[in-house]
Amino acid sequence: MLGGTGKDQTHLVVVATSDKGLAGGFNASILREARRRIRELEAAGKTIKILTIGRKGRDSLRRDYSRLIHDSLTDVGRRRLSFDEARDIATRVLALFEAGQFDVCTIIFNRFARR
Image (cartoon, rainbow, N blue to C red; front, side, top):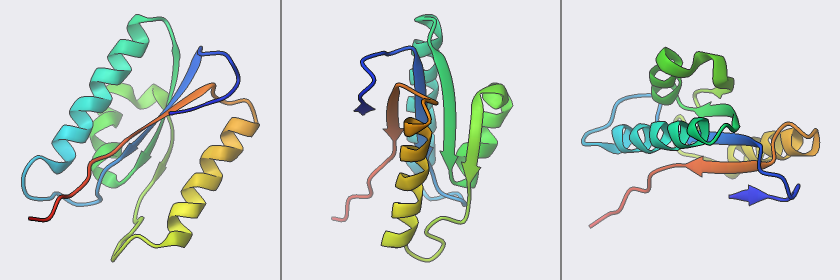
């Protein structure tokens, strides 16, 4: 979580999924957690903004939460995520924070574990 205003009214939820479907529950687990977090924040009366990374997250969350989606990024890491792409996302989030657009940021993602 990124926090720093001392407030906790406006939350940016960054949901990082893939652009295409993957085997198993990779995107499903991310989206399940994102929906759980959004419901929790709504129940607490918080203002929510969503930034989606990846088509799967955008398309799935658009059905129920289109009014909350602030921005969507697709084709990130098309071949392999680069430092420049990650820096661009971080710069975008920091610019929103510096502009006072949110108080707290939560990034929801999944990690692939090789065996």
